[in-house]
Image (cartoon, rainbow, N blue to C red):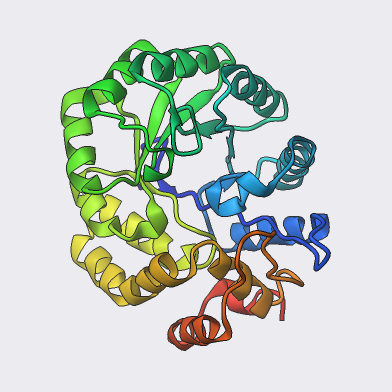
Length: 305
């Protein structure tokens, strides 16, 4: 078995809503239970795929508390804390730690298209969060519009004690992961693949030890990651090639809406509603997803039936 600390599949949990757009807290518990039955290695909450930008501060607090209490140590939980304000991310980190989170994940500071933290501001924000005393995963995603060079990531890994994990989901992710690991060495403890696993196998070849996918089909991702990390590369590649059409369809056609739809179809949650102004998935897109999904025996499609 692989002995690395930050390995495996740590998917993002969707945030279920009722038809009136209120939080579905019982549905949230069912989401977490389903994910644990998918044999995930950890769970990430309040991320972009959790519709974090459509949640109020009070709702975030409710969800953070509920999720950590309900999971109750069955798997590690990552709490996403991204915000432009350094004070806000620091307080979110303190709260996450106090409630029992294993890690926090954050993007560099940005707000909209034009307010972006520079290198110095980005470093100082992560340095401040380090004072909370909880492991930090840096999310290197194009959504922020902030360029995180390999040199900056390595500097943060070496000079900020709790920066240990890196979710790389920018373009040419494999090359960036490879250079990050080469230059950062042992300071890069948890290099992760992201963006629904669209480049999962290439990222594993580059040295990734983990993946953060959606919650739609981690039961298909887990064997790929485990096989690769246990040197069963041919089987890992076969598994990846088999599910690549599903990964591609989710990534390019559905986004976070896809997981909610499948969870509703499988009886995990009652509604696949996404809060306004998110456009709901069309019936054609849903049919296309089901056509591919029906080629697999997914936990999520059978969990609540």
